[in-house]
Length: 78
Image (cartoon, rainbow, N blue to C red; front, side):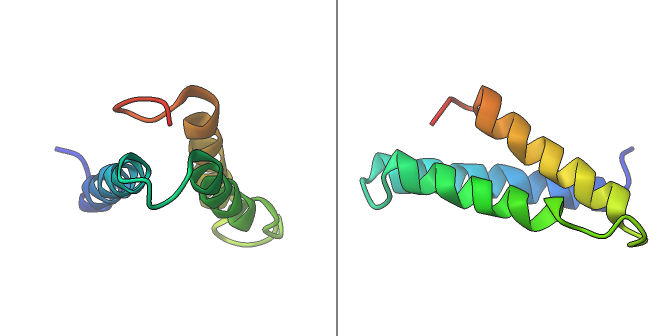
């Protein structure tokens, strides 16, 4: 079984993806705004000091968000 934080993180990501897709489907937020949200989220994890004890985690988070931006989400591309 996956560690609880992996399960929680995966669930949170799925919920956020679904919310962003629903906001786009309902024309609440245009695609450009949603992509901007994802870019801002990634940027928040890119500029972390290398001596930060969680630097590797921040790098992995940024890489995951960039992967979503580059390849779409688990359901469909925005």
